[in-house]
Length: 345
Image (cartoon, rainbow, N blue to C red; front, side, top):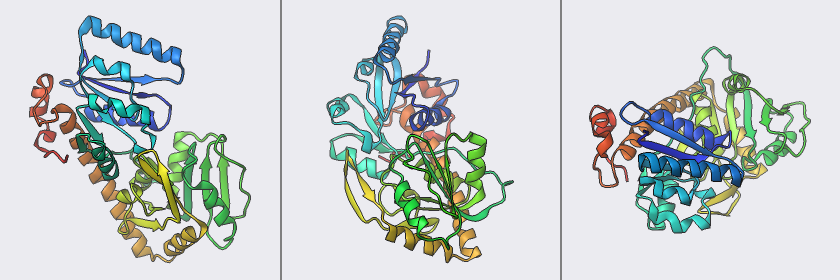
């Protein structure tokens, strides 16, 4: 029987990736992990919940349940303790009443930590991680890359419009899902790829560009930014939380936002052409030595952050909210380096 259950929607992109990363960090013989992914239809989700309730009838409650982003209220009684790993911008008002059912809120960003502490939650900072996309074999070009994907909150449209007015700039390669693209941008220095790109092709592009530009409006964590830094690229993003928690002046370039608006428990920030022009000008003015220094800082930060996240997550999950070891994981945690980690919350 699993001692840890991870619960979220299996959407094939961000939420599925979060489940996979947490499962990798937590799974061990002493603390086996079960991953439960819900779908988009009520019938499927009802069947999924019915199966979990049947499992409770046969084997009892799971030791620890971790809800990633979404709250499934009927699943709360299925665990002896429940933890929440939210994304503030997607946390719906209808879920506020269930916060008391969570022992702790585990926060990916300091921004989220503040937001949920204001709601009276017991919070603990764990950070987060992303896939390591580094491939040292790929030759790097003095060019820019923008991964829009399915998102409409990456500042893609203003980025494309700004680039069209600067034919003197290097090539900007944009990868975007067809459902998110308004049109295919046509300019001599824009390579707008609208359609499916397999993982190998995407990884090649991520490593082939010296600069990754992502003027995000908001981020739950910032996977694209972390993946960019994992390749040793110079990441260019919005100078606002939580993006500037990851990208700093030491390891990237920040774009001054032109305005903001409320978005759930977070804010969305607007970037304009002027901010993009300033950031790109600073990127192009970097000397090879400066660019190399930023690239090294970015890669080192990714590796250190990845290691620290895994320790923080295991420490948070394998102990209760008061620092006591969970009974069914005492043996496993005793030999784990995470047991020495202090509670960041």
